[in-house]
Length: 198
Ligand code: RBF
Image 1 (cartoon, helix red, strand yellow):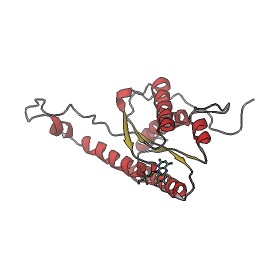
Image 2: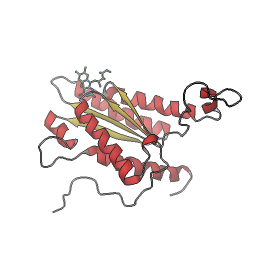
Image 3: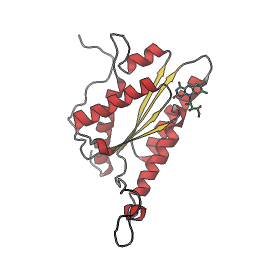
Image 4: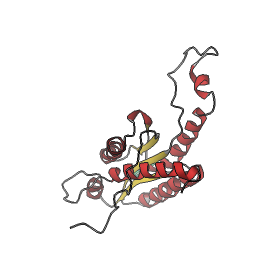
C-alpha cells in the first residue's frame, strides 16, 4: 500500500549533465550528515548524469554557519566566472600556465545545505533551526540560486538515523535522496525561468 506522507517522484526525467552543484554541509553529527551527503550525490550522479567534477563540496562547523558559507561561496563562484578571471587567477599575459590549476568558471545552478540538529536540553536547537531555515531561504531568494533545505531537525538520535537511511527502523529513508531529486529539478526549471520560459 502506498503511503500518504512524503514527496511524489519528479514528473519529468531531468538532464543534469550540464549542471554545477554546490553542497555545503555541517560537521556536527557527522555520521548522519555524511550519509545524507552521499544520498544526494548518488541520486544526482546516477539518476540525472550530474558530473562528479561539477559537484563542489564544502564543509562548515555547524548548521548555523550554513547560510553564511553558502552565500559567500555563491559570490565566490560569480567572481571566478567574471570575464578573464580564470586567466587572471592562473596564467601569464601570454597564456602560459603559472599558479594553481584553472578554476571551474561555471556559476552554481543550485546549492544544497545539509546539517543535522539533534535536540538537547537547552534552547540551542530552536535558535539554530530558526536561523538556519530562515537564513537558507534568504540566501536562495537574495541570490536567485535555489538553495535546498537539507537540515534535519530531530528530537533524538534515532530520528536522525532513520531519516538518513541508517539504524534499524523499518521506516528508515535517506532524505538526502529527496534533496538530490529536488536540487536537479529546481536547477533545470530555474534555468528556464531565468530566460523567461514557463
Ligand atoms: N550544530 C549542528 O549542526 N547540529 C547540532 O545539533 C548542534 N548543536 C549545538 C548545540 C550547542 C549547545 C551548541 C553551542 C552548538 C550546536 N551546534 C550544532 C553548532 C552551531 O550550529 C554553530 O556551529 C555554533 O554555535 C557556532 O556558531
